[in-house]
Length: 102
Image 1 (cartoon, rainbow, N blue to C red):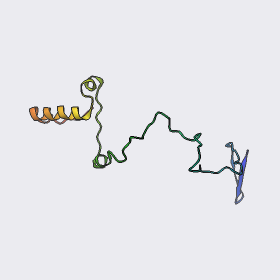
Image 2: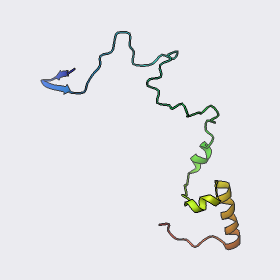
Image 3: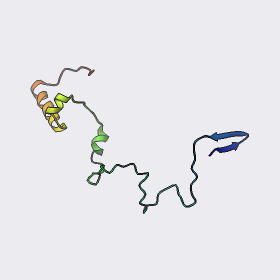
């Protein structure tokens, strides 16, 4: 289908294919609709135990991310163990000399 619109002697043409809606189709799904064809949520995503805003306060304060290499990750599996080890290091040796990561 070719859609053509004229405005002040300029013709705008779209070559995009257009499917006309049937009279009983609407732009939005009804709340009680069982339609899932437009649902891009995969069945393996389960948010039933999710907690809304769980990390909101921490995120609001600022975030930081440190990438651990595979060998370090084998020893330190979570942020609690990493932070504990780093605090112990700081207590025993003081803060590391400042340098830029590269």
